[in-house]
Length: 106
Image (cartoon, rainbow, N blue to C red; front, side, top):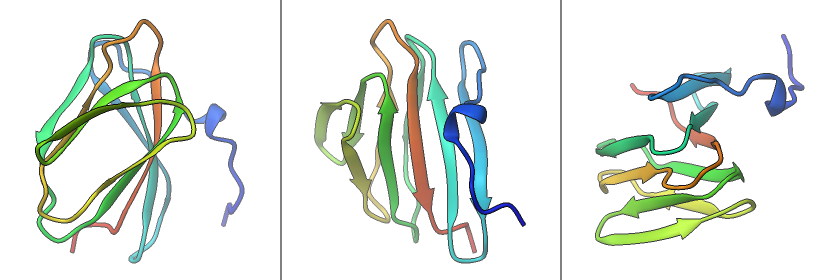
């Protein structure tokens, strides 16, 4: 079982869509990468019983969590509690790369 990975080797590239790549997954944690090219967005959505975090690795995104909308860049972490609407938009000129963690769906 592989327990060390460099995220740069796994950045998913899907022009015009949100690229997703699972780095690690168990019954207790799903850890993956989301990559958004410029002008791509992940629609606002919810996870009824799952908290989720986004850690910005590269680029800058506009994040919606509930009624709050804010920009976040490298090193910042965005928390989306279970049941709260959340999404992200890349309005910049560079790829947005996010480390995403949550409990896998039941």
